[in-house]
Image 1: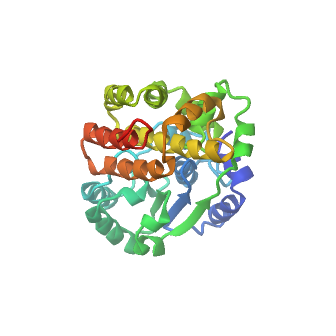
Image 2: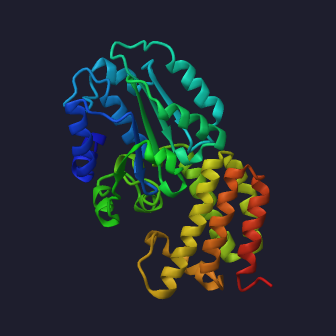
Length: 329
């Protein structure tokens, strides 16, 4: 499924709204793409940005022309991307952007475009610099900002942007769309909470990192369910190896989701990971208060962004988990 098809079939309001703006050349200078965890915010932002420079728009990007091809390969000179999912966007990045945009555009289209993914992960200094940039945009400058939580975005940024909201594809519909993917059902279940598009699920499943963080989750929780203190040792062995804080945060989120599945199992609700029901059953036998662990795990996960030592965070979480087991004191 292409992003064009995704927008047309599953985001009709956004598709029509931005399509009309392209057709009438009545574009806002700043768009804020908002969507729940898993929606393809970055991919949509890239595609909308690409549509501004396509040689053969319909009115959206054709994905085949020279401009689209160079844009896709990161060779479009007048486009800048900042990824707040990997690390905080800092003031220096915004100032460098302003400096670059003070120069004449290089490409023949004459437009300068930037995407800031996960704009809520900007430093205060970067936000202040961005606000100055948004207040008086040049006619040829266009911004695409993304967020999975508008409540964490400053009202001043919201007021200067046109908000386009991505609707989540319902879980049962998404599984239907994933039915023909060459992936194990277990892997699809594990990736659905983070990727709300079959193409992105398949792409992530084929990365080198996926089996590593899958093992860090499943192996640690399996060992923990058999012997919590050995699970503690395995967690220290596997989790810090992942290195990327973005992925370590995801591992902690998986822990919280499995604790949620323990709650689901205990009250007879549908599971998030039915293919791993045996692991959920084993955890349910030793966890006294999985509901409290969900909250605790998310709190620990937030500290990953604060550059706290990963070993200390693993310590904190596993000690909390051990205390909530039938073996804990």
